[in-house]
Image 1 (cartoon, rainbow, N blue to C red):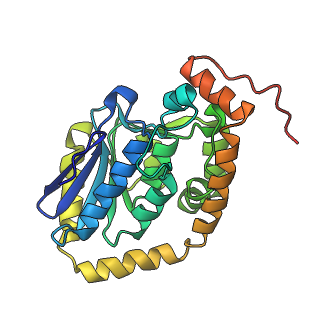
Image 2 (cartoon, rainbow, N blue to C red):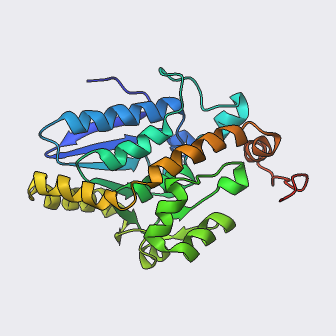
Length: 264
């Protein structure tokens, strides 16, 4: 088994549990974290005994708060990787492509890129203490691919635009009311509930589940091409003065000043 530094991986009966293990950074992910998540999902895919994957975060404060903005402010990127790439788009695609349902067990903050991850999962179960929202326009980032277009399919255009334009945080009850999560449970019961849902799915025909997942994805598969275009644009934007202003402001714990960048 691969030795992981940023995540934890275990198999419980027919469920693989993947935990982002960077609680000191609110489980924000760097390049290495993303590579390890990809390895974990591929491991679960290859394991014939695994029928469902649960994705969660370590501790009780955060599911994940997305890309490590402090790392980006310090080095201008998300840190070294084996491939030399920040493979977040590959992770998004893998969550969709793995022929086994992925359940997000949202144990705390699901913000920014972390919000995108839970939205892409097949099912989201939230602790009653969880909070949801986007932060990109505040920290010099955006997701104009799955993070916005697929989100609009989930909650509707008006809500998706509100989430992105205002960068507010929403509680678990609101997320459930909007259809952003499937269920809300007491924080102490989150993993028990997620494992119970996983076991219920695992009792069904794995071939039927596989075809159903691929069928559900077909309706939005064209968004993958848009995600590639959006990712290329984001790579240019985060290196600009405007993009770095957001990252530096976040690291320095101050409000960003975007007044010098006209909207045209």
